[in-house]
Amino acid sequence: MAVNIPIWPGSSSFFPGNTPFGFYDHDYDFQQDADKIADWCAKRLGFPLSEVELQDLHFYTCFEEAVTEYGAQLNAYNIRDNMLNLYGASTGSNLTGKTVSPNLGGIISLANEYGVEAGSGGNVTYRTGSVTLSSGKQIYDLSDPSVVSLESGTPGTTAIEIKRLYHEAPPALVRFFDPFIGTGIGTQQMLDAFGFGSYSPGTSFMMMPIYADLLRLQAIEFNDTVRRSAYSFEISNNRLRIFPVPLVNTITKVHFDYIIKSDRSNPLKGSTGNISDFSNVPYENVVYENVNSVGRQWIRKYAAALSKEMLGNVRGKYSSIPIPNSEITLNGTDLLSAAQTEKDALVTELKEMLDSMSRQAQLERKQAEADALQSQMMKMPLKIYIG
Image 1: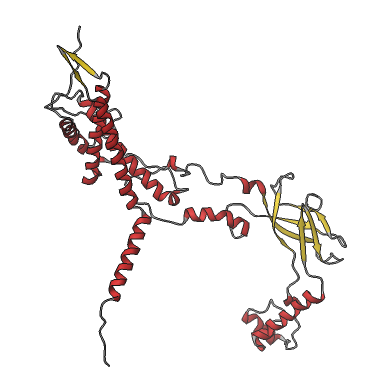
Image 2: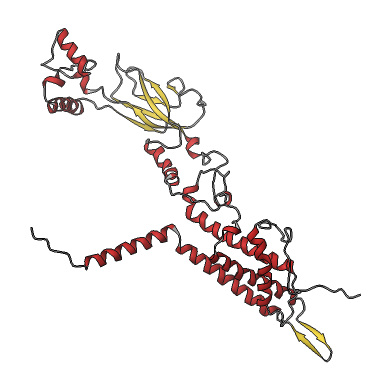
């Protein structure tokens, strides 16, 4: 028994549930346009002069796919244009149809790694430790737990890296001699009133010009540099060499800042549930109701190209159909080729339009506009004012 497969009758009536995914079935504008799109695509394919071997569900499917493809292209463009601003943001909110404000968060996150090395911040914790010095001993093994004390919570076998070692000469101010130093209760009260009471000697801050203090401090520091062994150190392969050699009744400990090497090497420093890459940026399907006339025209053309491709697949099943005393040759191959060309052209057109709207392109266009305006203003005659 022959099976009568219904083809396009010339009209349709859309109901929610007629599309494969139902992304837009409850959108009023989508419901209103579904039958119009089906009628338009059928007529673009030659109906009623030629039969169209498609049903209303096929046209609805092409319409849904066209809207989805339009939204996917828009979302891909938005993700690419805003990715640096979205790193680390929450994945819990839908970004479709929302403005993404430019910010420096992504750039600062990249710079954090340099901040770690420079000691000016970053995302690796600086910890504190100390080395116990011994009189007359200049070289110390940083892997010796009897000598080195690390911050609580640091495993003994953990590899560390010292970022800063606090081994400096005593401040010159503690050896500052002031021939103008005052004595008595009145002087001390004056020092306390000006906030100099904790300095020694503080009277010079009131009696002498500031450059005299600076010259005297500089003379003390130059004397230590030229005539005495400078305070310095060398660290090589867990070996610390201290300059000068510690003496009796001098400093007993040298403190340092360090990081745990595994903390720096760990690439997963952010919290979970945040945007990390292209795949989890929370852009969802566009709202068809909000698509403007330019976007809807692109959707109509793409739906027509998809319908042509679908009809080409149907007709391509048989290259020809025998009839009495002859046969009919079908144009499935031609339809597939034309549909692919139209789809590629539409996607290319949309991508080029979106690229021309990128933040970089808009700034370049504004710069060109400002340059042209400035050039025009320079050619305008200026008035001469006579006072």
